[in-house]
Length: 153
Ligand SMILES: [Zn+2]
Ligand SMILES: [Zn+2]
Image (tube, rainbow, N blue to C red; front, side):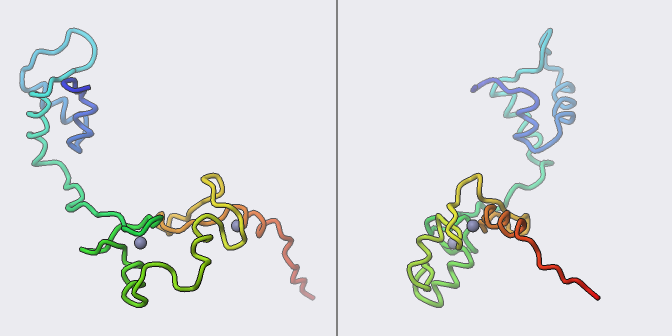
């Protein structure tokens, strides 16, 4: 709600700890509420934010635009309107679509084995950086397949 800032919100907005926000506010001699948490109006909230603007860790220096290709979850590379992968593909083929035929349409919604990509079925590895979908059903199918025993001796 406009005009009502709690310490927690201010700390999060300023990117500093609640403790440091509280300490600074307390040092201003502003009248404290008799009970309950500090609620600051916009004017004071701005003072707090201005105060901590200097010390707050730098945010993302420049906003990265998402890749303009539909369905692509990467961010654009440099000043391009598309991600690195699509940029390279466009350089190579003149288009951003996969050049291997019509499969790419299906690949958006289904895994190579034909399982549907639903939120429940998709999982990602941390190393995938959120860009690559993996099919849980395929993984389950693989792990439940009895492994051929390389029996020695
Ligand atoms: Zn892309
Ligand atoms: Zn699958």
